[in-house]
Length: 205
Image (cartoon, rainbow, N blue to C red; front, side):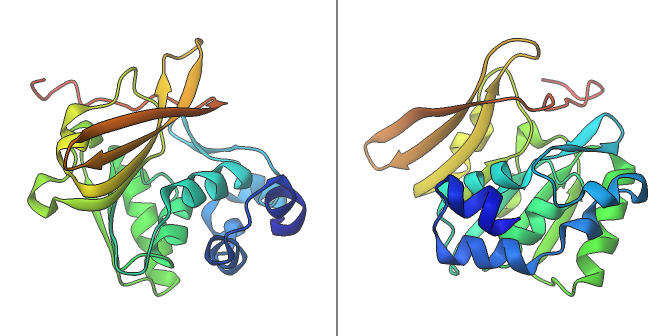
């Protein structure tokens, strides 16, 4: 998977490749699709959610540029595969999932792999995790129509946010947001297709 689907497509960061080799993707997909765990395709994980294809996981991780001193916020835990990859690279990861069943599954998967530097919260990712901000890096694994302002606010100066943006059925682009002492710069990179970033409609805003 790593050699054919990732390295040959331009991801050469040794730390990212090692993380992708280390984390067993088959542990993070339902039994009925486990035979496809290492194919370069997204897979359904239930509750109208998916696990991204390996190349996209590697690409987003590479672009995020995580160092071992970083505190990382992830929005959209899902099956926790991307979470586990980030956890091997960062000092600590805070991850938010809105679907209770997926959050519970993620906790078990992360515990079984012995990843103790991950904190899982059930909630609406649009609001981020203000109590733990600022974050050196933020990754969003589902697509909002626009970049949620609270995530930019919770990004540390010198920090980076990687997020797919766009409507369902319309064009979506991966965005890389960098925050400096003089402002915020947004760059569009590659076209993508992600499930929507779900909102908790019972909450205001």
